[in-house]
Image (cartoon, rainbow, N blue to C red; front, side, top):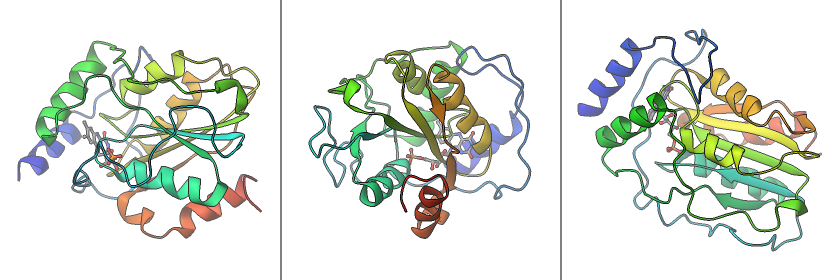
Length: 219
Ligand SMILES: Cc1cc2nc3c(=O)[nH]c(=O)nc-3n(C[C@H](O)[C@H](O)[C@H](O)COP(=O)(O)O)c2cc1C
């Protein structure tokens, strides 16, 4: 019940705001699903099914999938991309973990957004120069990308790289979040069309597969 209340408060506070110092006003996005309960946190978000790859590319892939996930949904999307592409996986993990309690997490996230914070990341990507395509994914947090995505984007040189944004969300601000990832990586050589999915739509793996085909990542 508490979750619903928090989400209601978020919806009611859908005002324009600055994300990562962004001055662009954001608007309610038509055509998205109605507000629902965000996915429950994974049983243990710190232990994903597939181990991440914080070190050098192990499989020799030129594609990296870097993602932040609090509750496990974005992680599921990242893993689908990896399964279909053979890319390496890098989990963007905060040095100080976010609270496991949903309401507390929303409070920390809001504070970070409103103070334009740059939460530290636990580990660095190994062999950054070995990748030519970097997927960057996150949940929508308070109408935009979590501030840790700003930390990540500002920590690497995207010159010569193709960036592909993706996100998961409950009901709103999908497009703004994808656009924010593009904006944060404006130094990239190119950006491919991103994809944002709700947890429900992620259950149909053909959504990710069709997207990867459309943008020419897989045949
Ligand atoms: C702090 C916080 C803020 C959120 N803000 C939004 C939002 O503005 N719009 C939305 O549609 N969903 C919002 N959600 C829901 C998440 O985006 C959604 O559940 C997402 O799929 C969770 O991904 P994860 O499991 O990888 O963390 C929020 C969730 C949290 C925890």
